[in-house]
Every structure is written in structure tokens, then in C-alpha cells.
Length: 479
Ligand code: NDP
Image (cartoon, rainbow, N blue to C red):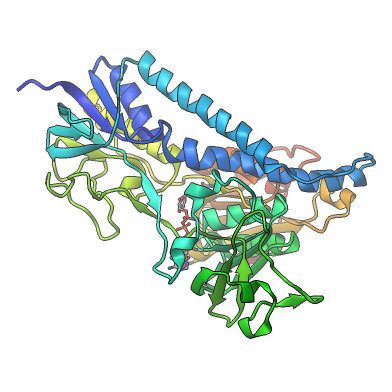
């Protein structure tokens, strides 16, 4: 049987684009469909614009610190429209690069929604039908919003980049990556940020000590973080809510309603919380997790197995139950990270187009949470490791010299979880400025199976924060 294409990729995000290009480089005839903008979540409404916002938000502290270092600076307000316009043109530029890369690799681009008709046929929203020997589903994920009454008034991370104006105040629901990162970003940009997390500590799954320090740092920077708290209901604020009428629960500060929405934003949202408070915020953002994009694209009809969380079930080689259909990235809900989706795409090409079966290695993936303070992590947390084997914990928390000089109280954390028996560093956790950069490098050593003694044999780079990773002599505790 002949097919129109050797490979048809559904979804033009980081994983799909990389798989399409590397498959085409083997001489395969490749097509790719994207219904929205090329680049997917990471480039268009995720990592890239988020990181640019992290940079933008960090200037507020830099201005303060600069004065401590002797600079004569006066800081003014942040101009969102200026930043937003520049951000959008940067995203246009990046999308253009993605298209050019695909074009340059001879990948045929289809701007439309694709769905599966059968194991070898894709139907496009343009009416075209295309056959392919292999189909790769890389449709990513989308934010999910709980069924809270009035939740439709809120926004998600999809909308935050497209706001016409910055809110004066915002309530962020959730305690994961996105909620905690945006709490820091918006706080740095001058927004009054309240964060509700339903559990006992934000960033569930990360090392307890590290998440504790991040939460402490966030609070110290002005984020009003409420743990064990969730939203009960929300609705558009009424005149009575805004007038500061106590019968409607708007808390007063000096006779003025504490969290009046800005007139510029044009509306406010009244929120009732599980802790009994009722307040009005300019904006409410849900960062309550993401779900795989598996509905309405003919997956089940084509015989693809969908798991309990709506994810495409795949084997170690990203193959679904239907031999001609593969899936990579967030739609498989393995590890929701861009570089992992890219790895999965490359392993798929290696397996299917280069005849070299390559399982995806999901072990010891370093990652960073761009909270303020930033968190970098690789390997096991103390809590995970001590369940498995006896461990030594090397840990130090201190005021780094740049902050100490500026008069800041911010502390950093450097922590190693070490196997008592093998001496291997099982986990490394860093809370500090640029922790993401540091953990990328520490991640190499941990992935190579470095022992504590290997770390110790490495000469310190002085004066840095990271030198503590190779100078901690005595375990703080054993567990
Ligand atoms: P996460 O799964 O990280 O966090 C979701 C949060 O929402 C959790 O705190 C969860 O609480 C809470 N939550 C879920 N349902 C409800 C509910 N009904 N009511 C109240 N709270 C609720 O998802 P994110 O959306 O933050 O991020 C999605 C993924 O994207 C991440 O897992 C990560 O892999 C990736 N990402 C990575 C980044 C990075 O590498 N820096 C940045 C941003 C995203 P609970 O803990 O109790 O379940």
C-alpha cells in the first residue's frame, strides 16, 4: 500500500516539530498539522513568554538592590503595554523561526485541525484527507479549571500573556509550577498577589525543605500565600462589594476597601474562600493542572487506548496500541516538560526511521521551577530516598553575599541526598538565584552516578553560592 506521507505529525509544539524535522532529515516524506500557532505551549503560551516575564519581574528587586550598592536610581512603574507589545513580536519572530525550520527541512505544513479517520488516515479541518504510514500525535495539553461556581470569570495561564492591562490585584489558585511561578512574576511586576493552595505546602512532590524555603521566600517578597485554602465560589463584584460594605465582607484597610479592583480593569471578582473570607480581586487565575488534548481527534475511534487521566497510553517507544500510531509529549502525560517531549520525539525517530529501537530515558530529569526564589532539582527528594535506603543529608542554608550586602534576608539552600551504602548522590536540590542554571550542571554529575566523594574531589569555585555543593563536610543528619 502506498501512502501520501511516511509520517504525519499532529501538533506543531516542541516535540512534534523536532520529530518532524529529524524524521525528514532521514529522507522520509513528512507532513505536520497545527491548528493554532507553530511552537505550541512552550513557545507561544508557556516556558518562553513565562521566562521573559520572570526577567521583567526581577527588575523591581534589582532597582532596590542597585541603590544599596550605591547607584542613584529612582524606580517607576512597570509598563505592561510596552512589554506586552515586545513580547508578542518576539513570539511572532519565534513562530516564524519554527515555520522556517520546518520549511527548510521539507516538512509540509498544514494550518488546520487534524483528526484520525483510521490508523493510517488523517482528516483535516480544510476538508483534505491524508494517508500516512506512521502518525505521530503530539497535541500537548491544556489548562483545567475546577467546577467552582463562577469559575468562568477567571483566567488561566493561556490568557495571562494576552491581558490588555495588568490587574492591580490577583488571586492565584493552585500550588504547582504555574501557580507558584506566576505568583512571583506578578508580584514582581507590582500586582498585589494572593495565592490559595489546598494542601499543606506548595510544590507537592519537591523536597520538603526546598519547598518550605521557596514558600518562605515568596511570602517575604510580599505574596499573600494561604495554605489549606481553596475557593468556594466566585461572581462578578457588585457595587455593594466595592463600596466596602462590611455586610458583603470586603475587608477594609484604613477605611478604604482593601483590595479594590482597578477601574482600568473594568471589573472585579468577588471570591468566597474555604477559610471564610470574602474578598474582591481584579483577576482570578486558575493554575490547577493541565490535561492531555485527546478529545475530538478520533483517537478512540482509531483504536488508541486512552488512560484514566485522559492521556494516550504508550509503551517505552511511544507506540500506542495501534501499531502505526505513536504519541509523544504532554498528551501522553509522562513528564510534562518541553525537553522531555523533544527527547521522546527524537527517540521515536531513532526507533521508527533509523531502525534503532530507543526507549525514552525518564530517569533523573533535572528541572527548575522559576519561582522567586528559584528552585532547581534533580533526583530523589529526602522524603523519597529515605523510604528506599539509608541516606545522609548534606544541607546548608545561608545568606548569599550579594543579598547580604544589599541588606536582604533571602537565604539560599544547597542540599545533597547521599546513599549511605553506595555513596552516590541520589538527589540535589537548590533554592537560589539561577538555581536552574546550577542544576543543569549538577544534573550531569548526578546522571553520571557521581558519589559524594566525587563532589568533594572537585575544587570549589570561589566565591560562588554553588561552591557549597562541594564543600559540605559533615552530614546534617542521617535518615
Ligand atoms: P501542577 O500539577 O504542577 O499543579 C496543579 C496545582 O493545582 C496543584 O497544586 C494542585 O493541588 C492544584 N489543584 C488541582 N486541582 C485543584 C482543584 N480542584 N482545586 C484547587 N487546587 C487544585 O500543574 P500546573 O498547571 O502548575 O503545571 C502543569 C505542568 O506543566 C507541571 O506539572 C509541569 O510539569 C509543567 N510546567 C513546568 C514548568 C517548569 O519546568 N518550570 C513551568 C510550568 C509548567 P495538589 O497538589 O493538591 O494536587
